[in-house]
Picture (spheres, one colour):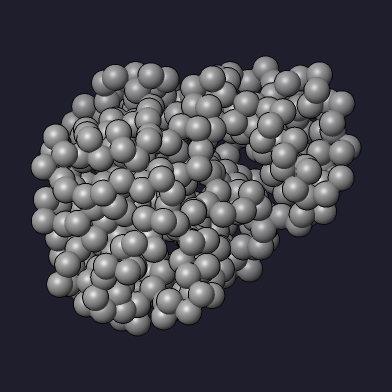
Length: 438
């Protein structure tokens, strides 16, 4: 079996959420428990940190991985979805899982998977935990797939839980009020294990406090502990200052990361109390070198210069709100947006947040859930957004590049899948001599 054949089996034989949406969602632990028992309960062989939240959990997870790597720990990192390659989901010390391991896992467990019929997410998570155990890691950072309480990752008993924030997303599964969604996310809070809350609202804070009290879990709210202020951009990175007048250089340039960084710093303080030694220099090194050390992509990522091309994976109203704020701070001749979305998001709420004074290139990723670009354009017209529909991400990007002057800004986003295809498309344009700086 080749690597591609193994991936084809995972994608085509198992329900995949990013392809079919809700039909692939399997809440609960029956399948996961069966898989874990068959694999020797690998999740019990290392310490773990559990990260949930509506937005920011990927960034927080990668920051924590980089910091712990800087501190000398062998770190497993499980996140989803991937942007370009399946291996992005499963990393040890920033390096993607070997393709040979993926092939061996599928071949060795083909019969087991056929009997249990787990979802794609349940299988990939089980593969990750088995891989971490086989690599003899020190600590795993495990990102929740969806929600928390009934997510298959919730079989772990972490030394620390982190919940980044709460906003409206996946309401068909998690509830249509913020307290209901907070209750689902709070489901990762475990008995006697401390929890860090990144952001809270008046209606969500009591939910977290009540759950933490019930589990005897020490709780801390990051935004009450640490505040950060943006100072300047420096060589593609971001210089910030803490409320203690400490300056930090951050390897990501999105100002919306300030709350994520405060969450990470608060989490590091709690990890110290758990016996995980992290120095101030380790924190600095991890924050500055998160891209190189942990492999993070798609967070206000520069794909090109002259014209400046930026991609970001913000894909719901809460995430796009931060993106829109940052776009307003950019100085350019013409703002051009390449936008595509999946059809189970609140698309109208997202479109209402986008700038009216931009040229739009509406597109669709190559996944079944993608909203057709022409339909997205029609919805955008209702919000006074003007542009043209393109059938593929690559064609939309190429047209935007043809139209742009050196002083324009092209933003690409609206969906993880659009960003993933954009990274490939921009690389291809580089190879064709389009004068891009990948």
